[in-house]
Length: 329
Image (tube, rainbow, N blue to C red; front, side, top):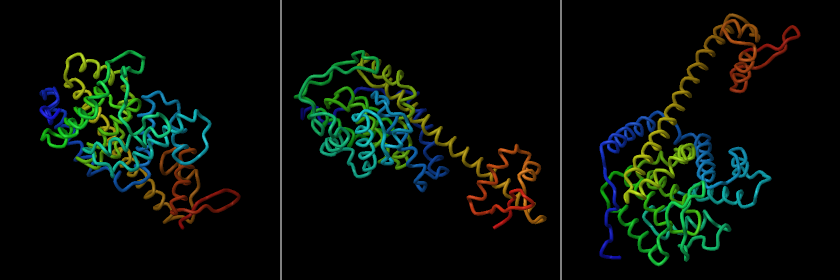
C-alpha cells in the first residue's frame, strides 16, 4: 500500500462546487458573528439532539425526537433496548467529539467502539467479513472493500486528509464518500461517516460541532443515497461532493434564518415591553384588556405576553377589584 500512500481520491472540482464553497464560507462568517450558539448551551443541546435523532433515523432507529430527548435527559422510555442504546452511545461520542483527532486511526476505532458499544461483536474493530452495502430500501449499492485491505485503505485516506491542501469543505465530503465506499465496519458505517464529516468540519470552524447537518441529510435521505449511487457508477465522488455541499449550505441557511427569527422575536418583545412600561408610568396597574388595546393583540396573546414578562421578573401579578392585573416589580 505504501506506493499509493496519500494518493488523491478521484473527484473533480467544478464551477458548481467552487461557487457553493464560496457561498458556504460567507455563511460561516455570517452565522459565526450573528448566531449565539457558542455561548448558548440550550441551543447547543437542541442542535445536538437533532443531530443524533437524524443520524440514527437514517439507520431506521424508531425513536422520535421527543423520545431521543427523553433518553438523553435520563428519563425512562418504553422502546426497543437496541434503539435506546444507539441514542445513548451516539450522545456519548458526540459529547466527546472535541477530544478526537480526525486523522488518527486509533481515535476512529475508539469512536466506533463507543458508538456501537453492546450493539455489534466487532465494536471498535474493522470488520473481518465481506459485506454488501444497501440503501434505506434494501437495494445493494456496492460491496465493501475486502477485509484484509481495510486498515491500509483507511490509513491512506486519513493520511491524505491530513496533508491535502484542498479546502476542508471539499476534503470532508471526499472523506465521507470514500469512507462509505470502503465500509470498514460490520455496522455503524453511516453514522460514523457522518460523525467524522462533522468532526473534520469542526476542526476547520468550531461552529460545525453544533450545526445539525445530519438533519438536512435525513430530510433528503433519498437524494443522499442517490448521490452515493451515481458517484459509485461514475467511479469518483464529484456528485456526492456537490450534494453534501448543498446540504451544508442549507444547514447554515437554516441556522441563519433561526437567528433572524430570534432577533425579530426579541425586537417584538422589546417594543411590547416599552409600550407596557409607558402605560404603567401613567397607571398603577395593567389588565389583559389594556394589553389587548395598546398592543393590538388577542386576549390569549395578551395573556402570553403578561405571563412571559412576569416570568422575566419585569411584572408581578396582583388582585385588583376581583380581577387579576399586573404592575411593575
